[in-house]
Every structure is written in C-alpha cells, then in structure tokens.
Image (cartoon, rainbow, N blue to C red; front, side, top):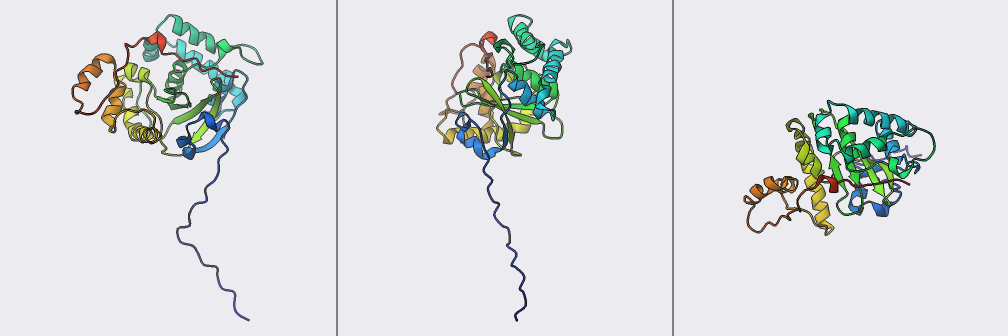
Length: 268
C-alpha cells in the first residue's frame, strides 16, 4: 500500500475574484466598479444621506439625527471661519441650516434632504475626512477635502454614491483606489494648511482622469499640474495658462457665481 503523498502547495496562487453586489450599478461609472469593496443601500426615507454618513462614522444608520446635530453645530460655530466665508450669511447659509434642523420621526420632507456640494464640504470639515461623491451625471463625481487643517497620518476617506438623482448609498472603496477630481469650491476657499490634502491624493486623482479618458469622457490634460490648473479661479487661470505648452488645450470656465454652484441632490 503506497503512503499518502502530501498535496502540492501552489506558489503565488491567483486571488479568486469576489463579485460585489452593486445596487443601481448603472448609476455608477462602470470603471469604478472594480474598486468597490462593498455597498450598503440605506433606507430611502429622506434621511439616507445622513444615514450614510453615520455608518461611515462607525455609528448606526439610525443615528442620522446625531449627524444632523454635529453638522448643525459645525455650521453655526463662529470658529469655522473658512466654511462660513465660503457659504456667506445669506440664502445659502439659511438653506443649509434649514436642511439640518429636523425634529420628529418618519420621512423627511424634500427641504430636509442632504444637498451637495455645500453639505459635502461641511462633512469633510467637521469630521476631517476626504469625502468622495460618485454619480453617473456629468460633473457630479467629486472629492471634497476639509477647508482648513492638514490631513492626519492615517487614511481618512468616506465615499457615497448619489443615484437616481434622489438617493444616497454607502460605498466602501478598496485601499489606494482612484478618486475623482476636487470640488472647485474647495480650491477657491481652502486655507494654506489644507492644501496638503490635494498633495496626498493627487496621483489617485490623476489615475481617475486616465480612466475617464479611456472611457471617452472629457478630462483635462495628462499631467498633474494641468489637473491643478483646472481648479484655479479665473485670475489665476489666466496667468497659469500662459505657461501651458503649445498644443495643450484647457477649457475656460464662465465667471464664477457662488449662488450657481449648489446642487440639490435629494433622497427618496
């Protein structure tokens, strides 16, 4: 009787791909699917954006009122100078404040739904996270950094997807994956000590641009300096464009109007 031979050990076995269930996958750019580790589709009751933030903060999705409370305090905090300067004291400020003040139970009415990009910048500032918003609609996928303060040594990134123009989902991205370009509002209003956030993520943003380009989406030039230039304000851009090499075209934007930037991304 022959002795039992040990089973051969495979060297460097190939990882077995795990298929991730992505609800509303047609609402998220297809080249991002490979970087998604997990998706949580929260209840669509008017609180879904705040539920998503609660989960990403390691709280229960039912702690959405606590998130409103945190953000409300951050909004009215007079020391939150950068954000207050960006949003002003008029209509935009009152709109965000009204969105955050919700009392009661049950579904939230449309005027209490989370809005972008005003809310994303407030979330980033309050929790000192990079906030990634994914959306299939052109120009809506963006990354939001805190307006002041340097990044910590550890990765602090939260990601949400906005689907069907009225609902948020929680997205868990794989480590080191590509992320979309920064919000122009951040580039215009961030304090000097916050600019290092872009330095930490610039290569991942450039890689995202490459994927956009491969999918025939209009993106800016091939190097990182051109990416940064895309987010300059008009006066800075006029100076910077004179330094661009011949043959590289950068689209000029219309004059910047803060009141035209807010995008109402509601929830079911």
